[in-house]
Amino acid sequence: MLRPTSTRPPPPTTAVPTSTALPMDIPATNDEFEVKIITARRLDQVIISNVLVYSPNAGDTFLELGIRVTNLKPDTHIKLEWGDFYVIDGKNLWVPNFLGYKPVKQGVQLNPAELVFDTNYQDEKRAIEFDEVVFIRAIWALANTKPLVALFQFQTAQTIKIEIP
Image (cartoon, rainbow, N blue to C red; front, side, top):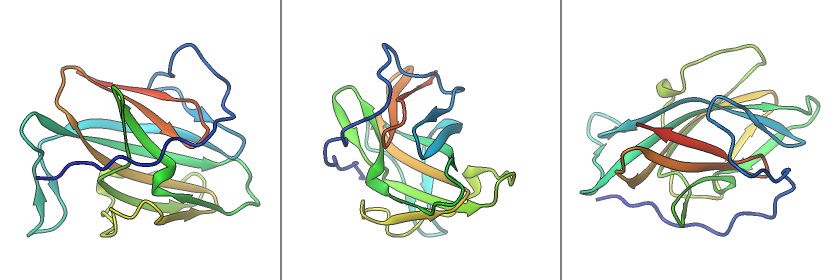
């Protein structure tokens, strides 16, 4: 029913090369922000509203990530495109199929799973703007492997390894 679309190649990175990706519980950073995976889970369905329910294709599953991005330059307004972050499963690179976000002040906590999806989820140029912190709920359709393993990349921050049993 719904398959992710591949996107442009990743931008050149200034991240410090590492021999392995960071585990999910370690934040990734670059000069502008810190990226932390708050939640990671499989989903059998994605419910957008009472009438829009998506199921993965046979052999696929949905990967949902809850992400907190903290601005490390407090006097700078951050503008990100949806194509600035993606997952790599094997050799394929994917932007999110579904995405919701909410900018908040430093110190505010929320559950990313409660974020409402933006209806323009197919537009990888769609901007995510924030000043201090933004919480993101992003979902990808991926092959249903056990364990589910993917690499998460957020702009030039270090790669994070996502692994769900």
